[in-house]
Image 1 (spheres, rainbow, N blue to C red):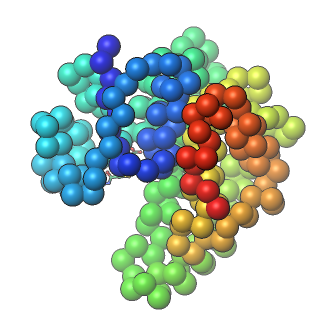
Image 2 (image 1 turned 60 degrees about the vertical axis):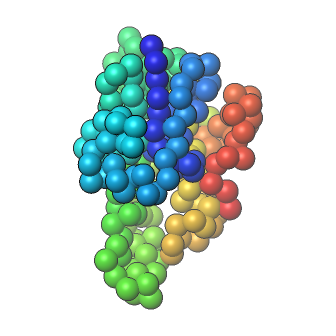
Image 3 (image 1 turned 90 degrees about the vertical axis):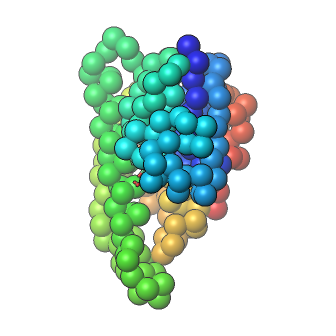
Length: 215
Ligand SMILES: N[C@@H](CCC(=O)N[C@@H](CS)C(=O)NCC(=O)O)C(=O)O
């Protein structure tokens, strides 16, 4: 099977979760990084410059042999199954993982939409307000749904949900998101414990966990 994962050249969780999963699983893939100019062309044409189809004109995209697939969570599941980080025969565990991937996707969309069309000074005010209200409300829900005292989202099973959470949290706490303070994680012990566990995981160290967005 010939795999190519296509995204921008930065460690945003939407692609990073699958890059990391494939690396941990020692699955060979072409790690294709496009620049903004090529993405803008693909966004209007639905194809990369080399003719690769980009479904829905969005990234990330996973090409499997000659077929291209879109959607972060679906791609992560595909890569997770190949890598042993997503169950193939346990629908309950799979559903537990899925709800985290989809919820993190929902929050990501909210972040991008907050203050989107405003002038820069009004946008930053809106973003700060968004952080204090809607984002914090959602983040508390993430916290509540991680089992107390567990190092992982599914106790005893390291999965793409843990990697997605770690990468998402790295981004949102790094100061890279306008209007968000850095390092607000201390108020969220369950999320912090999972992120610390992922940080210390030997496979993550091999991958280079410093590639995460960092504060
Ligand atoms: N629902 C998609 C959204 C992907 C998405 O919005 N990707 C951005 C780049 S990070 C994009 O391609 N935006 C262009 C567009 O939506 O037209 C997913 O979860 O993968």
